[in-house]
Length: 216
Ligand code: DX5
Ligand code: ZN
Image (cartoon, rainbow, N blue to C red; front, side):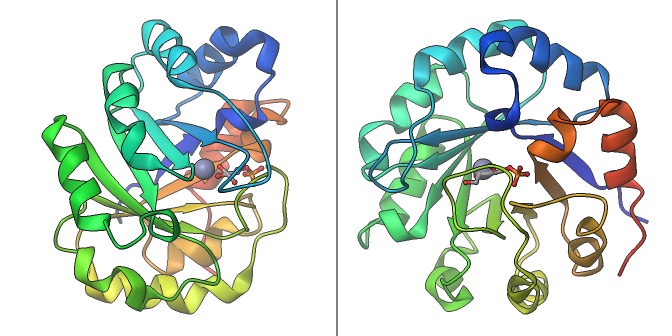
């Protein structure tokens, strides 16, 4: 059985205590730290920039999984690379036909490249990129906010992606004990989970329950 990785999404952490929140999930068995970057243009919410990512890099050994939900990713790839990102994931919907170039830009910085797609975006939109990316991040909610309901409608897309793609598949949005089993049975590798992990009384148990979630 393959090992499922969990990437707690710090959008759901106590923002006034990020360092201790990150330490908390690191000790609790997190594999990566998922960092949501929102600009108020590509999505209707605003989060953090490279300086906070750089500060987080100093307090954790976890690989930083930076999810760019921003309108002009080409302008910020370098800044987030220098801030210490290990993975940089861009959205196909924000690439304006330049996805290949942006993926090359991420790789030129020595980083792992990810491509993400919104629930309504078909797999066909990224088919030609699968050879070039390390990670595909499938959104199972419309990006913007933590705490939304998982959309079961994305499951066929994940199954088709698994057949076509050998790299890492991550799913993001509404992941909890009840929904993880669906995506694990579709063959995903990484679960990005915000509120389920950070709101848990016992984050170790929460992370463990995702990793061990029976297939549905
Ligand atoms: C959605 C973000 C996710 C999300 C995770 O726009 O990319 O990372 O907030 O939070 P939960 O797990 O609470 O849905
Ligand atoms: Zn995310």
